[in-house]
Amino acid sequence: MSNSNLFYQEQSNEVSLFNYAFEHELPVLIKGPTGCGKTRFVAHMAEKLNKPLYTVACHDDLTAADLVGRHLIGPQGTYWQDGPLTKAVREGGICYLDEVVEARKDTTVVLHPLADDRRVLPLERTGELLEAAPGFMLVVSYNPGYQNLLKGMKPSTRQRFVALRFDYPSAELEQQILIKEAGADPHLAFKLVELATALRRLEQNDLDEVASTRLLIYAARMIGSGMAPLEVCRCCLAEPLSDDPQTVKALMDVAKIYF
Ligand code: ADP
Image 1: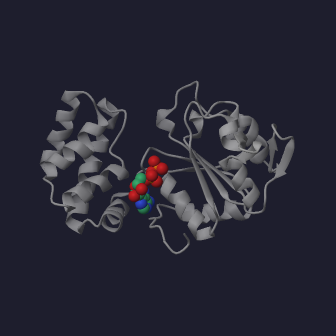
Image 2 (image 1 turned 60 degrees about the vertical axis):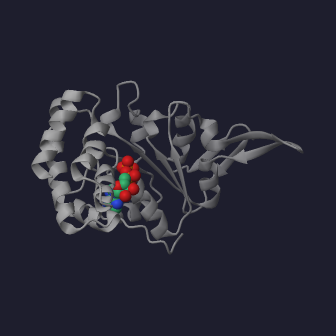
Image 3 (image 1 turned 90 degrees about the vertical axis):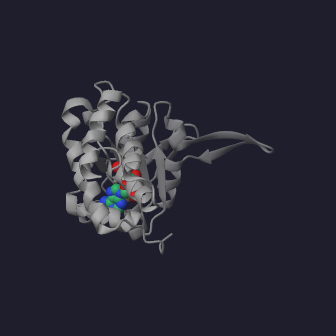
């Protein structure tokens, strides 16, 4: 893992902030829109720090037991199996909870004592109180755009974290990402980022979502493989963003200016 060198284009000072948080055993919260590089950043940092990474994509059925672990039944009877959070706590690894606001509220009970200076994980079912091994780090992320009032993170939870705000990269950096990550030629990278910038300006009006860096990478790869650019724009940058035919048409009208 440590020699795969996952490409990550730094946007601001997030690498040194993360390093600081790691050294000082502070948990980190990353907020930002979908596909802007949060997961890639955490994977990159885990690689740089040479730490095992346990990533959990949270959803509305995710319970504390899914994070902590549970008893299972095997040929020899029941046995305990650590969940991803417990593994990270024991090994001194990084546990990354993606879209943490989606998880059930009972997960906060296990996150709170881990996210302050106690750094302990209560394993209710086995009666253990696990102390986090040195190097353990809790990282959570969410997309503020998806939040509703019910799902917002409680202040008592969020105030335990050092928070970083991510957004889509600046035009120059996003072009670099397309060149390095998708193998796009510089001219194509330039045009796609210009188009994305124009599409992102439309967001306020009709769209819940804007074209993400992830979608631009798909588009760059598809165009690079020889597919017709406008068709690629339709399936990567228009249809994923809206179900309304009028809106898709408006997005395609913008795409036609560039391709
Ligand atoms: P998020 O977790 O914010 O939804 P990801 O980290 O999964 O988004 O990013 C989606 C994809 O976009 C990544 O797989 C990667 O290819 C690319 N990407 C986005 N931002 C960056 C970046 N700063 N450096 C390198 N690749 C990036």
